[in-house]
Amino acid sequence: MKEIDFTPNLSYARVTENQKSLLLNWLTQEHIQEWLHGDGYQNVLNDLEIFFKGGPSFYEHWIAYNHGLPFGYLITSEVRKDLPDDAELAQRCQEEGRAMTLDLFICDKRFIGRKLAVPMIQEFLIHHFSDVAEVLIDPEAANTRAIQAYQKAGFHIEGEFIAAWHPVPHYQMRLSMKELIKQKLIS
Image 1 (cartoon, rainbow, N blue to C red):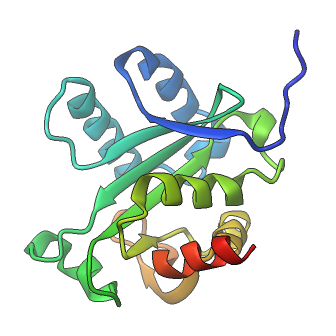
Image 2 (cartoon, helix red, strand yellow; image 1 turned 60 degrees about the vertical axis):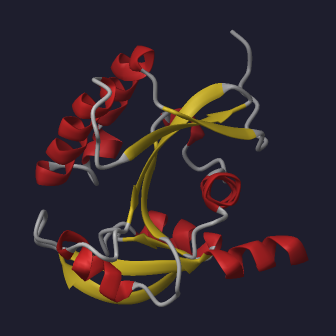
């Protein structure tokens, strides 16, 4: 079997119907279920079904690849600042223009701890969402590994809350795309 190259050579594509079993297998893994469970997990599964049927899903579902090998799952959604359903998210926004939410998982265990999370986040956002003003993410406060990666990627903790879908502390984190792009130009 060919050895895996973990040097970053990242690409991203929307999930396709033929990846359904891969994705569903990924989502049942213990290291994913630790952070994606209950109502949140069920909401993702329900939205994936709509997505696979070509319906108007709430989220966009993406696969991250390294050297062409799928290893990560990203979920994005637009913050609809003008709609009552997104009023809470809209209040967190600090910049004019579009905003989005992001959630992500390194699903292939062989890629955990390989320092791909930060470039995965930054490259994904720059290549696919450079027109967005800001990105919101809300990890569980206990998910210290993810929080550390998010901070290295440019997110800042803006507050803490108890999530309705899982009543434990979560952090409200925000990333300014303008700052991320400026940082990447300097480095």
